[in-house]
Image (tube, rainbow, N blue to C red):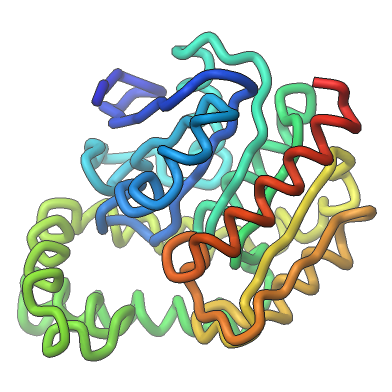
Length: 275
């Protein structure tokens, strides 16, 4: 799959199929496997109706870890730069988990380029209880780094995000550890950039006017379902769908049900917009 210099860093991206563009922005606060699992679950099917576009965000997956550029507005510029590179003028914009604030920022800054907005198990990061969790994770990583070094700090971050993975899936733990060691500096800066959001998105939700859908699982232990409800209440006319019993990571662990909601929403939006 191709790479290009986008907004000052080497970005890995994928495109599948043809038709109206659908951008899918992966989650995670840096490091990890980027868009790989999301594309594995959805690219083949969704590319039958859409030009599916996804990419590894800066300091994630197969993309480069630049020294700077870690802010939500600049992440939205990363996306805009990719669309320019691909010659895509307008797209449906989907953000999952930590991809949600990027999707929302892009929609706010570029409503003319956003056909619709899809927010999957995500939040605005204004919620103090959620911010406190990320702050504790960042503080722990920095403390372990100072006391024991980078390798232990990476392991602490993985253990905090995925408790028990080291024992239940040691191969995956080792893969993520290797990726995160390489991208460590960018991971720290990425986490801080999400803490820096404060109310910059929440205070602008009333500006979102394009067709919008929020999907959340009612058993989400990473981002509480009330965060999804808060998005729905703040975005006038938005759809809100709850997947009963579903944990965080709907695009992978509830792939079929979530994709069904996506396809239905996009079909309704296409009829509404006559595209």
